[in-house]
Image 1 (tube, rainbow, N blue to C red):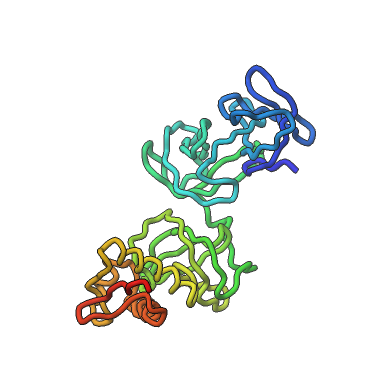
Image 2 (spheres, rainbow, N blue to C red):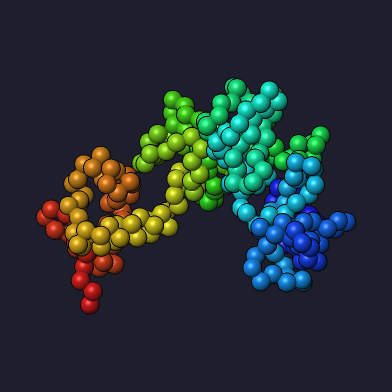
Length: 277
């Protein structure tokens, strides 16, 4: 089945002066010469992205856009007309946002958080700032401890509203943020708690998996600083957060785990990489 706005694995059917034609269900799809990988032969299968060109013809490309249909992405405005705005999404043909799909009048050179979708009337890919209608927590597809993809949506008094797996909304509380984040940032996280239809999330991985990730960071920083770092369990939380990008609680758990594994030793002034036996 051919999926517009997504990646498809299609077989090369024939060559032409201006590219190659790929096998579609009921049509041949052009992959222009500039996007044909060197050495491509008839019968080869290529992973391509499908979209419609300015003449509404289905066309293939090996370029990778900044997002596919269903994704929420932060994109920059290239130009603006009375009908709408055009966004740079990594392809030769810019992505259109109708004026009716803008929350405020878009301006050239500015970035906006949009959702990529297929317009029902035209069948073409388009974008919209009106993302809320695509999000719902009525029928959840996630559960507690699930690893999820997060997009920072908007700031609130208690933290940030995040978009979960392009489907749901959740809250990332201020107390769980130990790094600089911006609207539109894409992060990996997990579901901490679900109460009714409200979802709390945390950046990173749950439990010991999270500690393992932080352990790799600490070992790398030790290596980059001649095997010694002037931080320990008595260091100020602000200092740990600024240098390591993690909470003091996570730092203490991680260095404790590394000590038990005999990968570090404690000194009076910090931590030191253990010598390999």
